[in-house]
Structures are given as C-alpha cells and as structure tokens.
Image (tube, rainbow, N blue to C red; front, side, top):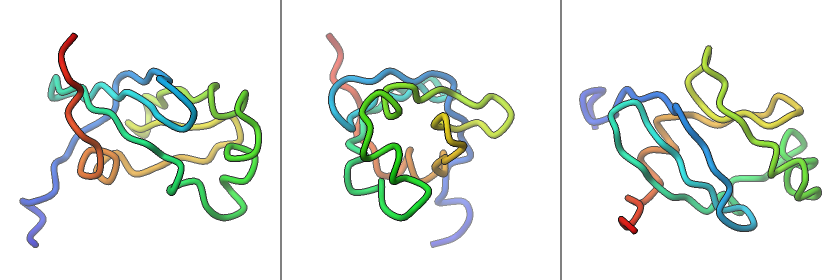
Amino acid sequence: MSNDDYPLVDVIGVRVLARYVIELTFDDGSIRVIDLEDWLRGPAFAPVRDDYDVFRAVAVNTESGTVEFPNGADLSPTALYLESKPAVPA
C-alpha cells in the first residue's frame, strides 16, 4: 500500500454512542462509527477501559486532529478513519 492509500484526515467532532462506540466527524465531511473496545489495550488505555466516565470524556484535540482521553491517550486519525464504518443516515 502506498502513502496515497492512506487518507490525510483530521477528526473534527466526536460523540459517544454506546459503551466503547463513538461517532466521528472528519474534516472531509464524512461521519463514521467505530467500536473501540479492542483498541483500548495497554497501560495508557487502562483508565479509559476501566472507567466509563473517563471513556465518555473523550474529546477532539484540534492540534493533533484526533480524539484524546483525559489522561492524554489518543489514537491515530488515519487508523480511526480506515477502521470505522460510515454512519447510516437517520
């Protein structure tokens, strides 16, 4: 896969839909949904995985263009884009 196959996108909005499931709005206008349960591994994500209030406090970091949790743990915006699914219009 070449670098052209990886979208250069930033997250501009995030909303928690359910336990570990978030809706992301990207700067290309797309809205996508992802279940992060399997992503929350390792010591950096332990507080996020173990305390739903910490998970629900996820926010967009406008400087890095991705989502960030209160403890500073974040995820690649490109990985989030590639692994998420388009949201079904209401």
